[in-house]
Amino acid sequence: MNFVEELRWRGLLHDIMPGTEEELAKGMASGYIGFDPTADSLHVGSLLQIFTLIRFQKAGHKPFALVGGATGMVGDPSGKSQERNLLSEDILDKNLKGIQTQLERFLDFNCGLNSAEIVNNYDWFKNYSFLDFIRDAGKHITVNYMMSKDSVKKRLESEVGMSFTEFSYQLIQGYDFYYLWKNKNCVLQMGGSDQWGNIVTGTEFIRRKGGGQAFALTSPLIKKSDGTKFGKSEGGNVWLDAKKTSPYQFYQFWLNASDDDAANYIKIFTFFNQQEIENLIAEHAEAPHQRALQKALAKDITQRVHGDEALETALKTTDFLFGNGSLDFLKSLDDESVLTVFEGITQFTILKAEFEAGYDALTLLADKTSIFPSKGESKKMIVGGGVSINRDKVPNPEKIFISSDLINGKFLVVQKGKKNYFLVVVV
Image (tube, rainbow, N blue to C red):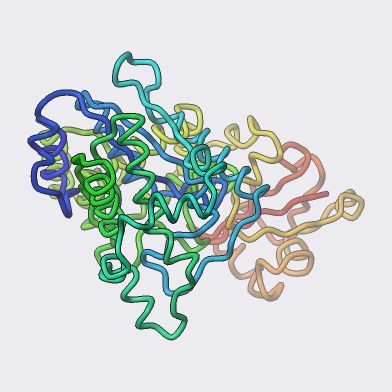
């Protein structure tokens, strides 16, 4: 199956310029996708384009990942209702390094002729004067042409309008394509469907300035089945950086996908072939409560993004919180990792000096923490067998907890009912 066919059956082909498929059929071709350095980490919304580059390389072509050191200084207006804040050079440099490190984990940079390359458009813009640019580049693309693009029209029709800075973005991105076509033999630019106008400007630029031919294709923007934006959780963006989104939270994001979304995501965010995906969908349909699709998706993508060890931790964390995982798992972790396991779960802090004498269960659960609003409610649930501390049922309201009960000398895990967890941290 060729690259375009692969995108087509996975539902990842939105627009394609005539002649693109025929050009790729001639043999190895070079193509690129740009990544916007608005943060020092990419997020799950970037995975579609990262995986597009991987598929492009697997099909025998040469992928270029462009990190926008120059375009990042301007800000892409596509899909934005207002102008982005301009980044300082220090922040931009930090963001570029973070993104480059992440991209290097996915693409193959040592496979011969079609080895991946990372390029930074700041390298060819840093010594390009404004006057030279508008003479060399600006004269080839008319204002009428630029204003016809949706990303421009929508902003011009809005109350906020569009600055000249953002208006120039289209021309700068078009020049990127021209530069890579001329210097790296890039004949294809890919991206999200919101980038179609900018990409086509690049092909037009190549035609007018270089007398050459280049091609374009885009993928659809991913939305959840309920119409809401993909890539967000209750805590905000789901990042690829483990320090911003822990592997457990990352795993849970995919595990909690709806059935309809999981059936879509399994085609987009994995490299399972058509038969494997059809088998998973059939298996899921027979027993939806087993969540075969979500588990296969979450496991595969967490391993790909974070590695085997992080996946194992995510699985053990999930088993501990939602299954019958052993305390040995927590005891094997350092303090920071324990806190990561319980990130997003209500935590209470008690001073170690106060804890030395010990607390009875009612005082601990109602006075020193607010796990229960009163000792009466705490007592009622303890008597009913609904409270566990460190995986053991609290036997009676008078039970005393002392320092030796602490996990790693610092933590108590309180479980109220089946699924309500709390972490008591003794400091």
